[in-house]
Amino acid sequence: MADHFQLRLVDSHMLASAVRHLVFERVDGQPLAFTPGQFLQIHFHYDDGTATKRSYSVASVGDGSSPVSRIEIAVSYVEGGAATRLLGDLPVGGIVDASGPYGRFCLQATDAHPRYLLLATGTGVTPYRAMLPQIEQLLARGDREVVLLYGARNETELLYGEQFEVFAQTHPGFLFHGCLSREARAVPRPGDRSGHVQNVLAELGPAAERDIAYLCGNPNMVDAAFSALKEFGLPVSQIRREKYISSR
Image (cartoon, rainbow, N blue to C red; front, side):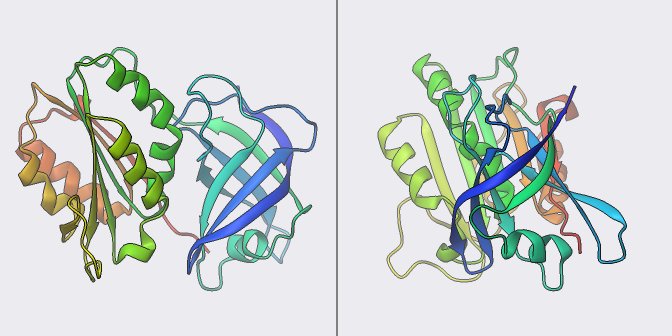
């Protein structure tokens, strides 16, 4: 059952021009038990007093199974958005109401397919950041491969991109492709691809006997990638989806 608690902001920085990384601790001092891939809900009120909430995947990197003392999320700025006003301007020491964790967009212990295809756009990459310790354990088995296709308009919008690059360099079996749809890097990297993530899938040759796929981010990408993967023969049971919808 999801817990309700308060969070106090202890640190933050801008990941991109319109995305803020926030680090919280629970006001009650308790750690947060969660499974990488799950999300929290931040509760607040509109100006007219109506209660509302927004969902944010936990981006914290722990050991993959233990509770974490620092709760990290990434928040996209939405022009005129109520959550943007709350979280975009929240000062260190500021307190928000929260609940969770929720969701089942998680790596499954029963998965036996040799390759994981992880697709993301925007802040949809945050659950994969939290999954890195689990991915490390998977790769240590020696019979698994993980490919992350991360779509952005340009390199400045590849959130946590350098962290994924370093992980790829230090973990054979993990491939990171930054899929840049608008502007290539001034100095391209070997893993870079041009275009949208769903259009890079063909290069990977998805196959039902080989792949399990995770899709997270913009609904248009999720729907397009879902259709493409089905055309490659993946059954729905091997495609897991989480859509990120911007709300005012």
